[in-house]
Picture 1: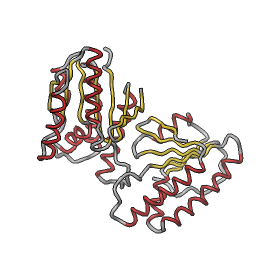
Picture 2: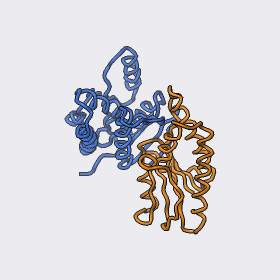
Picture 3: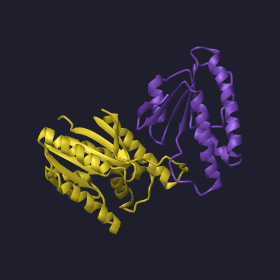
Picture 4: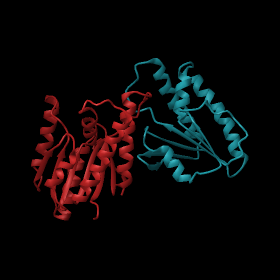
Length: 187
Length: 142
């Protein structure tokens, strides 16, 4: 079976990447007469986070095509039961998903566990692409700052970087959003 | 000289291997694993420095940032002589960009970051080609 179109969007905090991703999803939905599915990975951890999620929800309410929302902090393949080959899935965001998968279980961050999480996320993306029409993934840029061996930041940065490389390698389109301006890197 | 930079874990080394189709005749020196590059009489065609930031991190423990810069200007000048000995000699330098975070707390780490920035400017100005790698995709900026 043919895999869904894959679009990767990254950028810094508050760069406007989520908004751009929503616009992109809508464009694609109008083009293909598809349905929009928002896959939220964030947990409401404090008031600010709640406010941020509400603002994005409000944005989606004004969309000419209605969004269906699913919230899965981990195991995102669960959304597969709700989508079809006309669905445009917007996954927001990969870094939160990685956080949840890595730190949610409380397991020690040993090599085997890290590899299994990486394989799980890549596998989930693959699976969702076989069940939908288009998958748009939003993520955060890896910090470009001194990283020290054996530190958590090192483990985390390497994992996220590797996952990003795999996704960009397979993506039909990839964007880096800077201050609200999307830079097309691939496609 | 060809300078390849970009954030850590963006696939810079893999890109270099792919771009140049590197297999044999390569002297691959890693700043994360080896002592700094001594000038040797290398008979192959391609020299790659991977992780210039790694060597500079060691220097920053004991030297001032401007002294580090001068030291690397000299080392690079030596390897540029090797590069120019023959038309098919290639000198490729890979360094992770450390310049886009908050100012580090520790003086050593500030020195490391400062020295990296300066040495990278020198490397870039001497290079005929500079690429930034973003998750395996290159953007040529020189």
